[in-house]
Length: 247
Figure 1 (cartoon, rainbow, N blue to C red):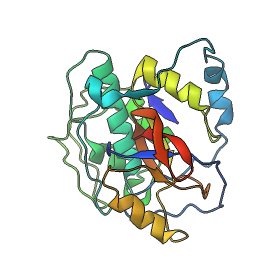
Figure 2 (cartoon, rainbow, N blue to C red; figure 1 turned 120 degrees about the horizontal axis):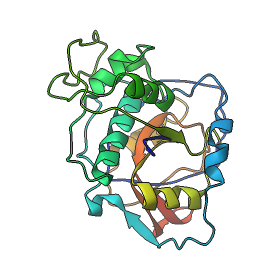
Figure 3 (tube, rainbow, N blue to C red; figure 1 turned 180 degrees about the horizontal axis):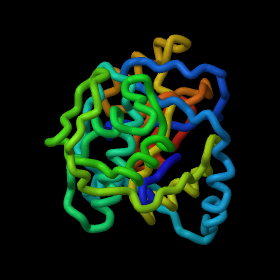
């Protein structure tokens, strides 16, 4: 889970299941997360030790009610969720720091990062390095296009990432750790399994979700979609029991 300076929001809640590596890195429309090709667990080791076991965690928390979440956006027919997750993360971090909301350019993040990943998919390590080195211009200067297009030059960066940390690497994060960081620092970029050719029915259910119930998938397949984690509710009921994340 990557975070911009501790650090597309969708109104939906999901229950995490144990991670199983399928060995596949399949990018489909409306997803786009591709795991990094290098080990990441060591990056998160020091952060995990920061968990305070005595910290009181409420039954529920929703960053949207605190005006810490930017408006919902649509990535369209392009595997660019990683750019939306990173832009939303940075926009939330700015709001949490008392800065005004800026609409940052996802197009710049997907087209101008040093790997030029565009609609082929990417991850937070690519985007956070780009945002640290180059920074993010406004959407008004480089509007989003849901296909591969050339990098737009000449847009002035309005904000840059000064520090970012990974809370869990490739392992399943401790729910208490995520809750603590949500309370302390605001929304966090993370990943979920949103379906693919192996589970097309889940992909359809995920895409059709309207927020009126809790989504639950116990398959444990590797995540393929970058989202913004904005809260949780331990009392939400689903097919596997109770408790869900809000992303």
